[in-house]
Every structure is written in structure tokens, then in C-alpha cells.
Length: 434
Image (cartoon, rainbow, N blue to C red):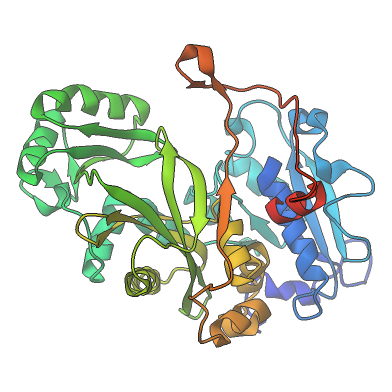
């Protein structure tokens, strides 16, 4: 392992108060499930001799007053997420209250907390600032390693238009879109509703009007005829005020596939598995399962190769997800977008591949190659690694909706949970999910 990277230098970094070498310090710039999952995954890795960081790991968890009042599990004593003797210590870090813009989404707050606590690394989790290129930029030349892709990769692949252009250059199949008509779109973006309507006419209806900076079901609308374009365009712009807007052909009988990739700092990329996220509600994933079974094994291998090739082309580092749209009627697949972070459904891939993804992200950031990460090396050494003959994994999201208000998304309190003891115990459920 190279000691030239800022994170690897922790091996020789002393405590500011003693002469002893101190544990690796990681700021977790997230909360809730994301923070809990990272704590558990790090603790699991510390119990394995091959992945244990001998000096120990201190996890500095950002915590607002609301988090503290909620009584999150990482504050419990004994900590259910950290087995005794694993060498992991959880340190809550006081974080400004209020909306996300004040704390988990605030790049300068994250940077200040990392510097004040003399952290060696920062892990962004998912949501909040995890895909904001200003976050890795904020840690350049600080000696603090960002656990994730570079700002350049985030900008290139996080932008839906730029990533589509890059994918086409790499020979990855792409769906017909506004970028195919440079007389109507600049770098794939349409300037107004009229240009969007012209693109839809050429592509053929139905089409999707999509904001480049959209996500989570926001900034995307389907149009079935020209008369709908102006209103839907305005809705998209209203939901996502910044960034460009593009037009893509809509595949009406489609499945949503994605490929989990992991890349090291030496341009080695591995596709760890596929997931099927087709069951959605309001463009939000409800059930994620893997591996993909609704197409041939050969098609799955092709998609995985495309994902790895695209990420290698741009020098991607760390974990990421390349998403595809699969046309059921034609057996064709098309590049959709790249999530330049770890996704909430990543445990599906962990249970398929045997790879501890948060731990692997730490190992990559420390400068290890994929073959130096034990569970990744074991996966690569298996000639049948993509068959998954003995397993299929499903992850289901629990949502709160107001049934008397058109099933509008809402919030509430979970008042009752019933588990069938002959099928699964709470401990098993907690272990697999967190």
C-alpha cells in the first residue's frame, strides 16, 4: 500500500496530545440509517484480521440536536452497532441545528468539523451533500481524504447530459435523446419548451422531460403528445430551478437495472453484481432485488462490462452505480445515469458478492488495489462469481402515505412491528439491514 496518499499517512500520524500513534479518524457526514450502516460495516471489518486497521478506527458522527433527541442507536451503551473489542469508537460531533442546508448538506460545516476534529477521512454516505462536487473539492490539499470519487468525476458523471455524451463515446448503448440533435440542444440541453417540443417530435412520443440535476422522483415528467410539453416542461423547471433540461425517448415497457461497481486508484474496476429496481412508486424505488433475472445472463454480462468500461474511461474511484433502462420488447438496454456515491440499496450487492462495501471504500481510499482487499479478491478469484446460483436478495422500503389524501407521501410514527419468529428474528433482520 502506498504511503504517499494523505489518508495512508495516518499510519505515522501522532496524537496532538501524546506521542502515541492514534487511530484512524473518519468524519461521517450523514445521519440515520446511513451513519448506522457505516458504523456496523466498519466494525465488522475490524473483526476480520485481513481488514482490521491495527491502530483502531474513531468514527466522528455528525449529530444535530434533533438527532440527539431521537436517541439514535449509536449513542446507546453498550453500543449495539459496535461489538466489544473491535477497535471502533463512536464519537458524536455537535452539528448546527435546522434544515439540511445548515448541517449535512453544508460543505463548509462538514469541512470545519473534519478539520477541528483532526480527521483523516470523510465519508459522505448517501443523500445530503454526497453527490455535490464541492464536497471533495473542499478537501483538496487539506490532508483529509474524501472517501469517494473526485470532484471531476462527480461533475462529469453526475451530470445526466455529460454522462450520456461520455457513455456514447465509450460505446455504451444510449437511448435517443436531445443530444442527438445539436441544432435544437446545446450539449444535450434544450433552452425552452419550444425546443423541447421539437425534440419530442423528432424522437417520437412518448418522451421524458428530465432535469439534469433532478433525482429522487423530482424533475422528471412524461409527455404523450406535443400539447403536453409546455406544461410538463414548466413543472420540471419548477421542481429543479437550476441546471439543464434534456429530452429522452420513453420506453413504456421497461425495467430499471443497475450495476454496482467498485474502482481503485489504479484504474481497476469491478462490477460486483446487478440489481433490479423496477418496482417504483412516483419514480421512487420501492423494491430492490438482485441479481437481475429478467434478461439473459449474456445481457447481464454486457451491461456489467459497459458499466466498468465507462467508469475506467473517466478514472472513477470508489463505489458507484451505473443505471440502465431495459426494453422488454426489444431485449435492448440503454444507459440511464451514474450515481456517484453508495446507494441505500447496496446491501443487496453485499449479500450477493460477500463484499463489505463501506469497508472496501475505506481500503480504496487508503491506497489499496482491488486485489489487496480480501473480500474483493475472493470475489474476483471465483470463476462463477456472477452466477449466484444459491441466492436471490430483495430489499423492501417501508413508506408512509396518507391513504385518505390520495396516498400522498407523509411522515408518521411506526406504532407496531410484528415479526414471524419462525422465519426471522429481530437480530437477524437488524444484522442484514444495518
